[in-house]
Image (cartoon, rainbow, N blue to C red; front, side):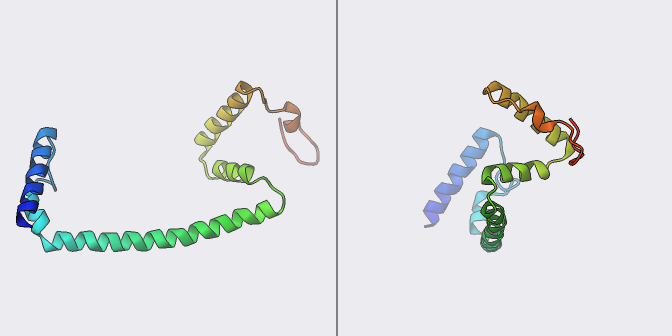
Length: 127
């Protein structure tokens, strides 16, 4: 086992030298491999990341359920998700997004109908 670690460390050292990078902020690979604190830090990090990944799964399931509620009302799920992406954008990104959608729709022969955005007294929408 020590020989395998040594050859791995040597390969790491050679790779670092050939790429001009340092391993572990300049640490000797043998020291990192043999250091129980480093191994424990890796194990703790992986456990925390796994816990976060599990929590993310639960949050993602909740988000899906929210979108499914709108879909159950007959709304197109793709349009709703598209609208949400636009909703969370900042003004600059939203403006660029809108220009891209308008340009793209014209490019594929599906331009946005101007009459959809005509001013209507009941909605207060402005062209």
